Image (cartoon, rainbow, N blue to C red):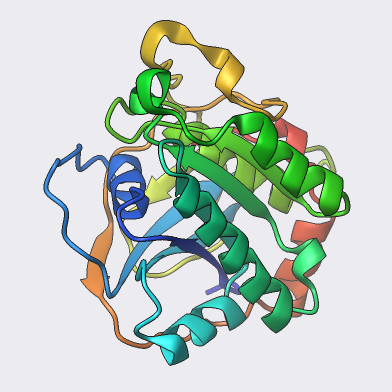
Length: 267
């Protein structure tokens, strides 16, 4: 079996902003109005990028600070961060700022780690908005211009921009492998249900993703260069109190560094 590549995406943000709802939407589990506080949940799936199979871990963290040791471990082992606030709650945006400070304090490489800041509950924003997206962009890009980051708004309830969030991570991470001819493989990204990753041949891409509520594309403050394909099938979900990450091999890391992100498709 070839070398494995494992990617961990850690989701941070205050309580009740919709972190779990965003993940459930990506996994095709729909949307529930019922709120259940999260301690720590780990969702795993396999994604195929051309000839490279990735094991992707989505770590959903607690919205409070009751478990500092678990939080520190989550930040220390992350390959990327999704920072979620509610567009209808200014305190939740202040919480995102504090989450980012935690990342900056614990990760000397924070400027190289892909970060997406997502404003959820866009469906409520027209009447109840408290956080203008311009303020978020100014904080992120004016104060921290060297970050590998994007700012977006989304609605887990309306399934708006959810897949685009994760497409951004692929672009920011530059994880598109080259095919044997040396060119970027544009065959797309597909998921597998196996618990193990392996190097496989590319697969044809899937269907394109859906638009958001009202077809309003102006809520995305980022260039969306690659096509998106729907992701619906969950591989595995299990609560975790403590988790560790398998680091990638030197060979696979070099392949990721050599990749071209603009040619990536997500499914």
